[in-house]
Length: 116
Picture 1 (spheres, rainbow, N blue to C red):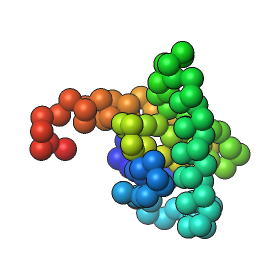
Picture 2 (picture 1 turned 180 degrees about the vertical axis):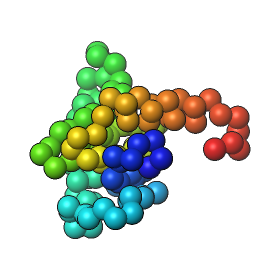
Picture 3 (picture 1 turned 60 degrees about the vertical axis):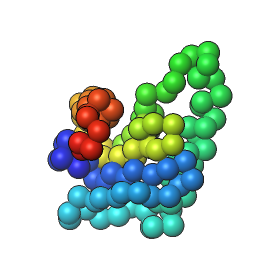
Picture 4 (picture 1 turned 90 degrees about the vertical axis):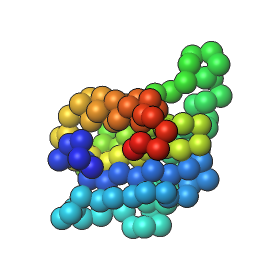
């Protein structure tokens, strides 16, 4: 949430759609109901699994950006079992947000055991 003020929502979830962490920026109105949010996460998982069919030929996916009229949605794997799902305002600089999220991911992978 701290990587950019245009981030509306951030969730970490596993391949089974179980939410491990979720945060929403204060003052933001939800565009989807909790049930619709869960369905959206499940669709992101299924789409990611589908894309992975070709990973041996084209490489592993780094992220997916979906641009809608009202929001942008970024989905990226954290590892083989977990994903980061971010929604932003429609006018957000998604390249900057993706770059920062990838850097956080990289830093976390290289952090000493027990460090955040």
